Amino acid sequence: MVARFARLEQALRRLRAHASVGLDGFLHDADLRDIVDRNFQIAVEALIDLANYVVASRGLPKPETSADLFDVLHRAALLPEWLARALRGWVGFGNVLVPQYTQIAYQLVHKALTVDLKELDEAARAFGELLADELGG
Image 1 (cartoon, rainbow, N blue to C red):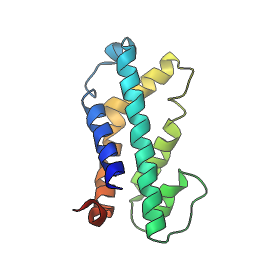
Image 2 (image 1 turned 180 degrees about the vertical axis):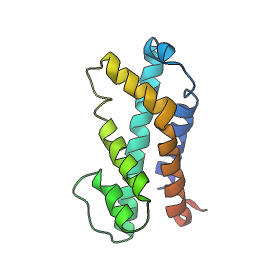
Image 3 (image 1 turned 180 degrees about the horizontal axis):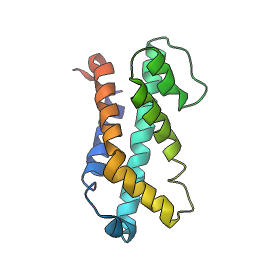
């Protein structure tokens, strides 16, 4: 889990490094969009892996979907409701990052980068606390 958490932190650092880019610059820089897309994918996958680990290691009920992981953690009083709800949304965000982009999808990705990234930062903090023993903290 240490490597997975480190990968999450690295992806968030890379996203934060680009969080101040304006919409016009984002829309006209295909390389930047690729960097942002990939790092959002890495961050969300890492959070799903970390949530699966917490659920399994604590003997919590197995969820039906990846998005349900965060509800299980909320019901076990390990995540606040607002964060569980936000993380469910991030799992669904992957649909925006898939193949056929439109201008609207790019605008949603930009909003995620410049406005909503704080939710992933808060999730990393919460999982850091949940996994403190495993992470050596």
